Amino acid sequence: MDERKIKCILHGSFRKHYDLIKKVAEIFNEAGIEVIAPSITEITGETNGFMHLKTDASKDPRLTELIYLKKLSELGTKGFSYYVNPEGRIGTSASYELAMDQLTNTRQVFMEKPADHPAYIPQNSIWKPEELVAYISEYKRYPPPYIPQNEQRIHRLLQSLILPGSIIAVGAIIVDYSKKEYKPGQERDVLLVQTHKWGNKFSIIGGKVRRNETLANALRREILEETSLRPRIRESICTFDQIKESGYYIPNEHKVFTDNVVEARNRKVILNHEAEDYVWMPPSQALKELNIEPNARKTLGLYAEKHLRLA
Image: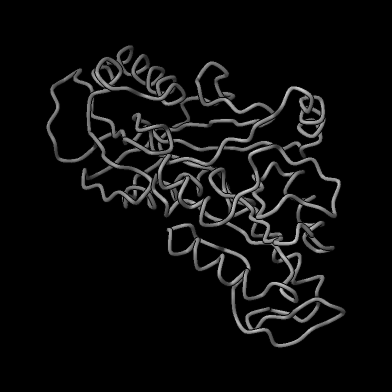
């Protein structure tokens, strides 16, 4: 697992467990798990039991808490919340944060089983930080939650309460328009990347659209971040819901792919950490020879069919 991709938010009482929260942050960060909140800095004051840190933008606990919760949107599908509750007690603020986690389907892991909160917690969610780091290091994945037979009704009810929303993902069929010479009717090469995100299968460049971001700007950003290319967007090729039989389908998550054809004037690709390798290849050949994840295969197939028809 590329641990640079894992992000974590820590929850707990700074008044009671500041030193322990700081230690947990050090354990995770040293293991490559990025703790994006809170920023572990000097405590500078207190308001009605709410501790203020040196890096806090405001001494208003309400604003500090909202900024803290905003970090949830940065966790991504690989991230998780970790609750530092050594005595089993979550506390008022962390209780509010737990509710937000559950309504947004954020993975929750606890140091101890909650003793002061009636929240439903799937089994296999209680881990000491050292044990969690060791598990991830050995198995390259999170400990899967276990849902006993007698808790399945509660689990289904919780899933039905998750806040609805759609995830829009943009993708790019990046077509080679460099100085490479092609014969009349010959397919131009397209760029495919081998990526951790799709289990080391090949896919096209793309990613999620951010809040208040246009589709075109999201596509340009993703291409630049993942390849360093600055191609020209040509046309939309397809828009479709996530394929249920893809092997990557997540129930209760509405994901829409909208893919475009773009022109690249050079073939010099600089990958970021999201991909392991890349290849420039004619689309028909790629569809026959490469292990391509189902969503990208659908788009590439539509592009190849249109290209051959027009050639």
